[in-house]
Image 1 (cartoon, rainbow, N blue to C red):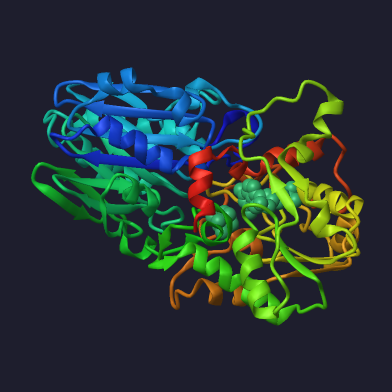
Image 2 (cartoon, rainbow, N blue to C red):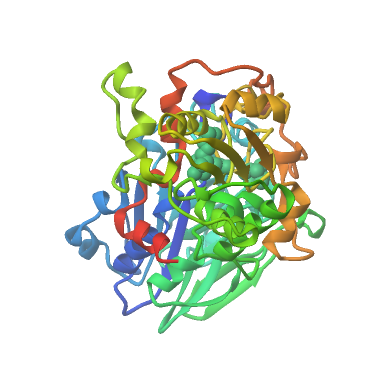
Amino acid sequence: MTHADNGGKPREACGVFAVFAPDKPVAHLTYLGIYALQHRGQESAGIAASDGEHLTVVKDMGLVSNVFDDRTLVALDGDLAIGHTRYSTTGSSMWKNSQPVFRDVGHTQFALAHNGNLVNTAELARDAGVLPGAMSSDTDAMAEWISRAIGEHGSDPEGALPAALSEVLPRFDGAFSLVVMDRSRIIGVRDPHGFRPLCLGRLDGGWVLASETPALDTVGAHFVREIEPGEMVVIDGAGVRSSRPFADDRVDPRLCLFEFVYFARPDSELYGRNVHQARVRMGEHLAHQAPVEADLVMGVPESGIPAAEGYARTSGTPFGHGLVKNRYIGRTFIAPSQEMRSLGVRMKLNPLKENIAGRRLVVVDDSIVRGTTTRKMVEMLRESGAAEIHMRISSPPYRWPCFYGMDTGSRSELLAADMEISEIRDYLGVDTLSYLPLDALVEAVGAPGAGFCTACLTGEYPVPIPPEAGKGVLEGGRTSAPEPQSLFQGAMFDSTAGVMPSEEAARDSR
Ligand code: 5GP
Ligand code: SF4
Ligand code: MG
């Protein structure tokens, strides 16, 4: 979603889920589905359900388990449902931006949930005649355009939504994996680049759409296939019908490479590849490329651990744990004072002194974005007596802001934007620093010929960023330390921090 108050800076990489299954408790299934996708967003959660006559939406700020209980779910049950978990970092975290969004137009009611970020929200708002600032998000803009198309052509309530979607989808630019529903069908859409994942599953007596495959496992559905970039599927009592609303020359698969590096669950399958195994291979490549004499290889929990395993196995250096993560810390934790704020990282990660003191450490993490968490973590390892710290990162330097659904800040906040590797090494206070080159990363993913977005690493944006969206975001570059208060923001930046205990357990049991 793009917010009017932040110059079009992207914030979201949400989780979406949909189920069509008459005779099943669809709201409960959707609850389980979005619970399995909680890592994709912890800010708000919502479910829309239909019993064929009425479409009802329940949504609120907070984690899935805070928003729903048995009573709300029973009241929501019906034949079909969609669900959403929303991710956002600092700033406009408010109820009106929670999803699914709902619209009632003539005889048609529909609900929409979105993962990704449009880059032409301002243009869509302008062309729809909406006053600047009146549209709070890109998802609102989509709902507005769909509503208008239904209003113009929608005399037949049965076919109105799919027809309206086919007509307006080509107007949307950027990243959008959507689940949409009316009273009797669910619809899945992936933009022509397929930046964000979306897959189809078969349930005994129904069908499921989900951002990631573990959500299918959770509800007992079998993976059928990924929705293809540029594809729309309509699912109702007659089965699954596929169509291609976008011009052929716009279809160019560019799955977000960071789904493999950081964002997706390790037990996800993307492009037919298991994400955990891909991360282990990234670590193996790092060990070949940047070997060093050391006593212990450790990962930064949780995201750095699979690559650390791979590094350790290939290098022959023992794998161990140097940091303990508090599993129960929520990312919405509000620090009462500046003094408390500087303790932020410490609340999340605490060193295991016995494993660190006097040791030469290889410390592996998936990425460095602002560098604030990493720097604080290095400081903690030094205080605990680490003899040497060799930092290894399983992706290339993160140099460009993402406009397709990850909030990684503006260019001026990105540590690697304008710094040499040696400057980053000195800033972080490590003995050596090495990043995995792009070709090695792609090879580690192991999906030859598959297309990826790499814009944040290369500056090559598959969908051009209009000046109004890029203004103030693409400019500048970090050449020095950030102001002290952002140490805390860095700590809260790791969205894995809000993962619920049982999900964390699932991650641990890989
Ligand atoms: P930093 O040192 O840049 O403050 O924090 C780096 C940590 O942020 C890494 O451990 C990485 O796992 C985590 N992280 C949290 N959210 C994101 C995100 O949206 N993208 C990426 N690439 N890393 C993230
Ligand atoms: Fe993913 Fe980076 Fe592309 Fe954003 S810019 S979609 S984070 S690869
Ligand atoms: Mg991390």
